[in-house]
Image: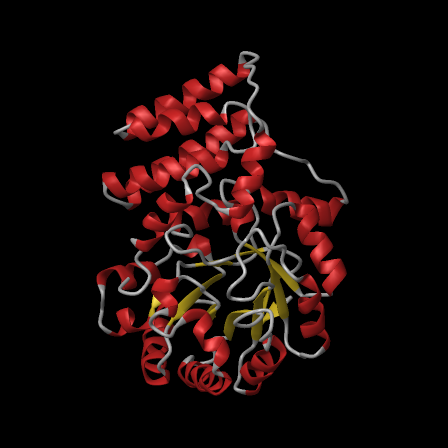
Length: 363
């Protein structure tokens, strides 16, 4: 698949995820074969105001290229000027978020709220294209506000008419939660009705899922979000499946340990200790979610208060598992919970409270 002059080939794309796809996450994904990675969602208004966190989100290392920057906003003038600033960072793609369903975003008329205003969508894309200095512009959308108001084909064509080079489609409506299977048939319908590249997204957790999405929908590429959490290996597995016709499967525990420890080290170089610990603990759980002993991690990791103790904990955990560890826990149950909620170890109330603190607007 081509994005402007950039040829991504058959490789998968890492989705932008708030408080997840930071530099350490992106670097590991690229090392394992992601074709394109994204920054975390960045407030267009924050960029214009020179907000420290917003500008920090825009920075990346050359090893992370090709890279896309995703903006959040709903004012064409603000979007225009933010893109003018973003161009100076020389990303390979600039994307507009038109799909985030989180209330902290939609309460401000952004994200998936834009789906209900096709005229505004066109104006936003036009402003981005005019300011982008030739860098390709894309939108990431959901199917519509709800199942009774699916307008993905209309919105995608309006984006295309105003200069968008690429459409990312999360194949759910705004009001559908993750336990609802993604509606891949709409990706196929869009591909049949649009003559710019279409990238499918939703319910992709394995290389086989990605390959099946391509075969069933004829989409140009596949974007992976939750399926990449603790699982950069999915990019290498997919590339091997496409190139050699075989999937090497889940990596052995020593490799998982090696990557998890490298991720921890990078997080502590990137952030203050409190932030690094919080992100590291979540990522460790995700790395080991497919292996025995997960209950031990969940029950004990949150009491850890330093980088050194976290590293020791991971090493000890792997040693224990390698000594013929036996458990009656159900990994299948954990995996089912993960597909419904990425922070699957928390109750619904705890999850909502945590996400209400996520910096989406002022970052």
